[in-house]
Image 1: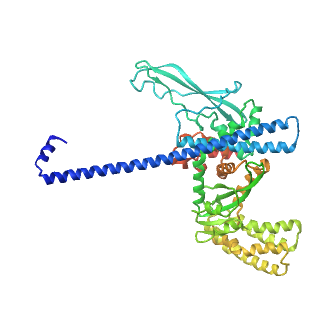
Image 2: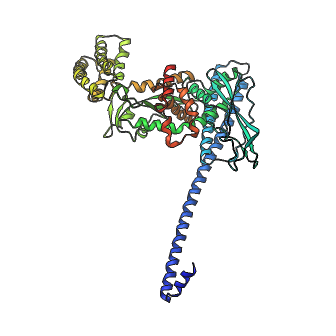
Image 3: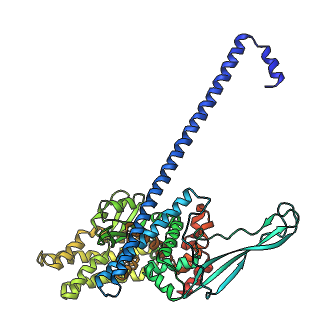
Length: 548
């Protein structure tokens, strides 16, 4: 308080001075109360942060112990099969390899997430890394400082050394080493040391370049090569990379790509028409080596057949079982038409926000399966009539929705009315226990949903878009039979989403992931939309379409 203020106070009487002091005290009390409230809020936030870190540490510790246990079991099994050809033991070993692969990848993913929440200044102790083989070709990239003068004093720079780090990169069918060289300069005026910042890597301190990571992911989830088989393939090229290291890289890449998968999910569910289907995914049950049946759900947004220019995409979701609560959770924010099969788990979704559009391919398939085994005039007639409906769709595919609606109303609707009358008449002449009668009942019981496509030019006659999206999963099951854990199923769903969406947009998934992984570590999350397949540069799209 200055002298003028003090002199003013001297002019106040006792009551005024007392009132002023009380007002100042109340103001001070209010400030103290606000500070205490802020301290309590910060303490609560700190406690929550500590709890999160503690839970992550417990999870990492548990998975580390499990990984060590699985490694021991694998080594024991390797010892058992030395010199023997027991098929059961070999299969058991492959199951253990996949289970261990999934656990190690999940462990790496959790570590990446924990590092993002609470980054540590000092890197943790890591196994000693073997030097990269000398026989690999090397590409040297020099990163010089942006200026030739010292930023502190403007003095001239003179080089006195350099920092060198190496990164293992993959070029289709070969490896190469990219050597990053950062010359060191010292200022002649003030001895300041100047060098370019180290280039970022997809995985912090990771040896794998974006091309190698993309190749591993596509090989595992699109070409269906488990990591332990990829490790063997790389070893034949003179590059020894353990399965454990590959799993760590996939886990780190999975954590890095998670925001992109979330963006695909939002795009898919933002449409007003959705194709949905699911397929079994065998998963190893922990501890006993047996498999349980998980589920992979596919949700496809593709309005190109209705002449729309909105980018197509597919989002996959994994669940440990087939309960209807899973699609309810997946589609809780979706509003529009759901084109799906007759799975009961979808039925409870239909109401004010979601309405059903059934699949004629499913209805036709029931007649076709009977026709292949026991051809009859009834199955022939049913397939011919349904085929006429598909012939109309072939002619209007890609046309505007209003034109499709008009043609369906004038041409398909009369055929559907005749088909229903024919089915009702045929049903009366058949035994209720016959398979053909069951096929007819299937169609008639879903007639409103089966014919809804004629009332909306945006809808499709069937759910083939979702079935096509699931073919890659079926191929994977045939090749390596199962995934190693529930977390492995979730990771597979994420990678299938990225790979499937790239393919729908005419982009080679490996080139797409290579491009994304080279940028995403430094890319703002607020602009993650820029890295979606349909937002990639036109040069990338034209290059990939030519390659395809």
